[in-house]
Image 1 (cartoon, rainbow, N blue to C red):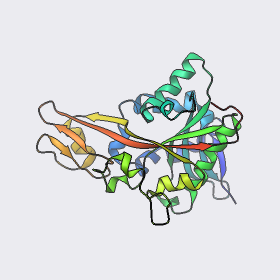
Image 2 (tube, rainbow, N blue to C red; image 1 turned 90 degrees about the horizontal axis):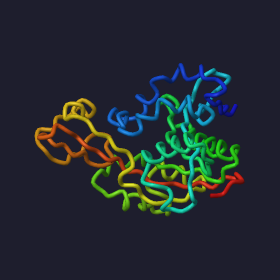
Image 3 (cartoon, helix red, strand yellow; image 1 turned 90 degrees about the vertical axis):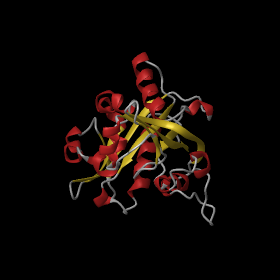
Image 4 (cartoon, rainbow, N blue to C red; image 1 turned 60 degrees about the vertical axis):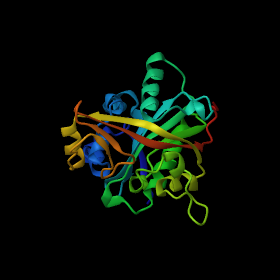
Length: 253
C-alpha cells in the first residue's frame, strides 16, 4: 500500500511520534540556523496545510516528513533569491502582508534512518509538488542541501552543483533525485543558511576543538566554518543549490 500524504492541518497528533526527527537526520550544527530558527517553530501554526507526513496506515507509522511554504516568485533565476534563510523569511512576510503566493518552496524532506533506502525521497518530493498543484501553483522550487557535499567541503558550490557522473546524470545523489523527477538545476547558492555561535558552541556541535583562529573543515559541513578566537565566534554559511520543478498548477509566475 502506498503511503498516505497527511497534512498537519488534518492530523497534528501524528507529529507526536517524530518530535526528534530533525535530530535524527541533520548534523547538530544544522539545528542552529540564525534566521531559520526564528521561523521554524511557527511553520505548523502559520502554514499547517503545507506541512505533511507520509503515513503508513497499515503499520500506523510515520515514514517521513515534508516541510514547504507558499511564496512569491517572479519566475526568473535571479528572483529565486539567495537561499533558504531569505525564502522562509519571505514566505512569512508575504503571509503577514496578505500577499498572493505564486509558487511553493520545499524547506526540508526528512526520512528517519529506519525508513531510508526505501525510495521514499522521491515520494516526498512528489507529494510537495502535489501540494503546490493542489494550490494552483505552477512551480515547486527547492534550495537543496546536496547530500554528498560534506565529502567535498572546500569545492565551491558553483562547481560542485554541475558535477556529473559518466552517464551524464547529476553527481550528487539528492540533486539526482530531483532531476530524475524532471527538475531543472538552477543557480548555486553559496550563502544560503547562516549559522553563528560561540567557539564553545561550535566545539560542542561538531565535537572537535578549534585551537586557533582559522577556517576549519568539520564533520558534516558542506563548507568550512570560520572560527575567531579573539571575538569568540564561529560563523558558517551553508551552500545550497536551487532546483526548479514544474507542476501542473495554473498560476504561473
